[in-house]
Length: 364
Image (cartoon, rainbow, N blue to C red; front, side, top):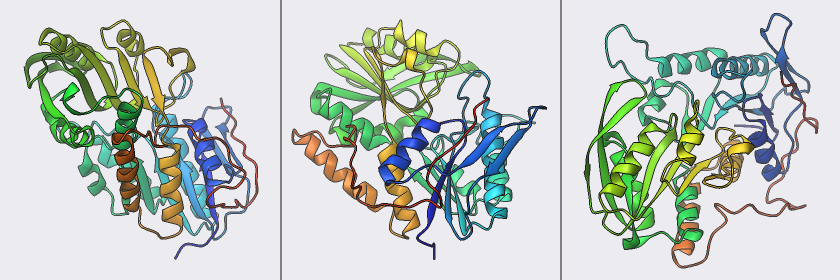
């Protein structure tokens, strides 16, 4: 049974989200040096006592800036997990808002690696005892771990925003899956908005390149809401939007949990006929592209609630019951706090005291 001493640590990939999670938990990010040696090898040093602590390491496996690659993020996390384990932490949980390498979850042709499985093996070998993540690209990745995996969903946050801010639900809109593989996700999201589903069929002549071949569903006179788990190059969304508008949709809104925005994807979407692009902060979105068409919602409260429950050995699935209630209130006309940014409070619901207050992470 976990002790009442949870401690939150973070690498350099998504420091802002880690700080928000800590704020909502009424604690601080633990002191740790996360930088590099002169030879550019990762350097990790935990700078507070974690003996017997329930440690949580927050790190998105993504590229945070031009000097910080996906592989740097992965290596930082592995070394932090190892350092905490060797410092006698009671339990180490990897909080991975965005699980990198997830698209490589199976072999599509001969002589290819299954990278998502290898990442799982690396985390297990480093000593992680539990994984907390959001919207895995493929649900079966949970089976790559022998340790417990909590795969949270940002669907309620996105749906609550659409209902409360955009007033989109019912027959005025249609949820669109950008490919055949995302139909289940689209159907689940459509139930939240109490609307129907359309499907875009496409083919990929080569990696990261796609062509729309057909659209199935009633789009005439409706706002089309394209739902996906991530936005990478933006090509899928731009081409799908054009096809949907040509088939009678009045406007296009896109939703995705993870905004990767590789290369010139953000500009491509801004210049497109899409009216709004909605993502969450599982991956840090540069300030210069926020606003206008690109809206960023926070998953800080969702992760903070999950961490509280894991540390207290309470049910994580109860979060979904609370989200259902919030969504019902939004459908009835009152926006819930799932997408709102609450005012700071001097008296949080639960207060966790870190081994030492304060935080430190040295960025390269």
